[in-house]
Length: 448
Image 1 (cartoon, helix red, strand yellow):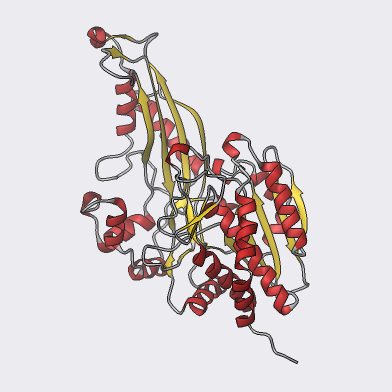
Image 2 (cartoon, one colour; image 1 turned 135 degrees about the vertical axis):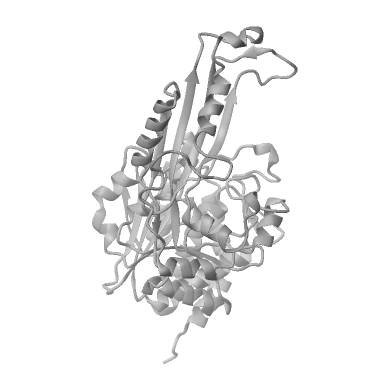
């Protein structure tokens, strides 16, 4: 009898590369843009057909919004590997900045270009095709496999909690969750993300006078643009210290493990500067101080700010209303509702009670220990396939609903790269990264 090995799986992955790209291309043609209410039905139909053909049992979790697609391959194993992904993508605008149509997948320069290829349809097909190749060689996986693929991640996963509350057991009996996506840095080193920051996002409005008025009378009325600007500037000082009382109260002291991971982490500052097009970082940050700030501190950021006349030429007007959108990235220990109440109280006590919070959303941070047995298996799989160490991020600056997967260690890897243009025109992945990603997933399945 011929003894099959992982090398046979890798060889089959290479053989099936063109088919895998074709399957991915079919998926990428579906404009499943949650923000526009488009494409969820077609995406669910595609996923159902693709996963059923691969031997999965599928079910659809209905929610108040887009449904959640679920698939399971139960082989009676002791361990279960869960994948969390999303089938919705960002809006394609501005379309005029794309070099090829966003929903017409195009290959050039050894890359696949299309909206959603990096975030996160490429990873979905990468994982599915790895499982198919593994099963073709070995007959079945040595671990139970589940997928949870939601359709509203790009609009804040607003109904995922509803689904998980109804299907808790489907999530909690997993031993590891591979999170939606990830990438490589400019040197081609795979990043492993062990957690995500939380987020609090606020939509703001103020109206100070009954109508826009001539700026010659500005000394008699409250200028909405100034009022909004003052309210925002009151939130933090120029050294990034957030001034809302109690904002830092519930943040625990970093553990020895946290500090060791941070000290050992190579942030590659020169590559960051090159990517941002800058000569130095804010506040002249560098070294351990910069890493500590990035991994352990929350942020306060203005995402958008608008008021008054914005057309061509001059118009001397005092605006009656102003708008802003701001976000806070949160670290473990912080809760969005608690911080929302503290911000509201702070503004009310400082004569900014006229600032309306018209809409908000958010969720807490979540992270997995680097010493977790299953997290280590992911790291070992990458090293085995690529013969080099990955970069291990204790916590990434972005956010996601990882906190909902309570009790399940989550690790994020994926087939994107440093210039994938995620959320931007000409989103892309390298074909080679797509193929290597399949080999890593196959190796991880075998390692379980």
